[in-house]
Length: 447
Image (cartoon, helix red, strand yellow):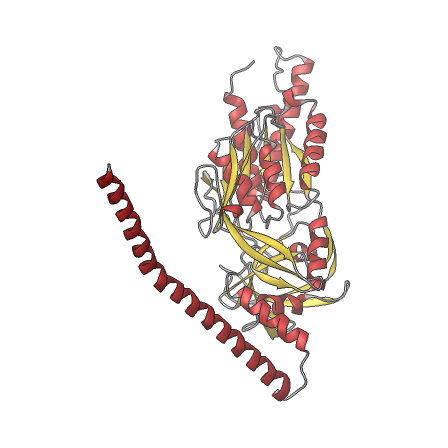
């Protein structure tokens, strides 16, 4: 018994000695690191004073400090930055869905401003700006060498004023200029419409209005078709949707899922890690869903498409999404400003990170590009693009087995088919999505 106690005691003493031997160098390293940090901060103070006292022109101390803070944050990744009080106010206004500008979401790549996506119905969208475009000049002045905030500042201006941006577009040989008139941007987060027997829900952004707009639009379109029994499926159009609020992305995903994980976020600290699960209730009543995405679908859009894809709740159609799989936290600071800091990565239900990779569609469908220099060709008004059939022949034999009601239904079906063909010319990807749901409806067992 004494031997056991002594052995235990000896082990404890040895452990204390060993711990002390290991801890001492660690404590010394930490002290050295802290000393180095303080030296660097002293260096920053020296440089700040030199600039303030010796620069060729008088400088604003507050602007110098804000620029230094922003430089520190933007060096981390493209989505972390400092928000001066005015920028913080603008961000909060944008989240509510109304603001002034061009209507484009941008990032920076290779020193130039890259368009993540134009927003529906905005001046940039109407001027023909596309996701993936590079903006190289603003009013003839190069943006090369500017940080993103400086480039965006160049594009700001009074509502009603003109701006000319120079664009480099993949597939177009020469850069070209686009003239845009700045306007007040009023974002309608969700637009719904009926195409044949399909409900199309176009989600342009994830702001405070998104989920309520989705519920309202879905209900209205279902009623227009005469009830859920008449609906063959839903298209959720997330193309050129740059993202927005994580909470809204979770609500939209949950709207079509009965159970299971929607998304998880993992940060460096356990406190920055969360898991979000769906609760029972499917607004689509189990009807088939097609989600449309493209290279302008980012962040919150990728959360929704990734969740519905992983749960096999939707067929994802289009082209690979943008690949922004990080979460930013906006932290208010003293002086009414804030900082936007990347605090976590998000993961789809299957555990995949979308960062850099994006969401790959189940069916890849490219949208034919419009040439900005192409001259529209007018079709002669007399031209009738319709194939002749038996019904067009003079003195044709009638169909004696068809009732008047059946004839009416046939005419309605023909009109829907012609509308689908017309849609294919206007929006090939959307027409493809609608055709998928039509095909699924045709082979589905009848109740």
